[in-house]
Length: 117
Image (cartoon, rainbow, N blue to C red):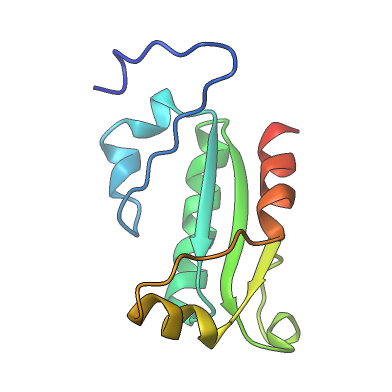
């Protein structure tokens, strides 16, 4: 499906895959320009992010690491340097449970700039 897509200059395709590295073995990396790796502040997620970065580099793909649900002072406690940090916000969880629409995060523009550069 991805190989058959024909995009115009102003179009972008965002593919949301399951957490893990299986998509590299399935060839999605052969059709991608950028890997946006969304990680959570857990040892499992951060270790997996290191592996994803290595695989992206081997595939000569740009890798952008986004740390999601970041607690205050978390950057001092982790051995990885994310490109973008989205702080933990419990109002998003409550809003989701109530079916409320999520406001656009200010970090989205920063993410877009990292992807384009």
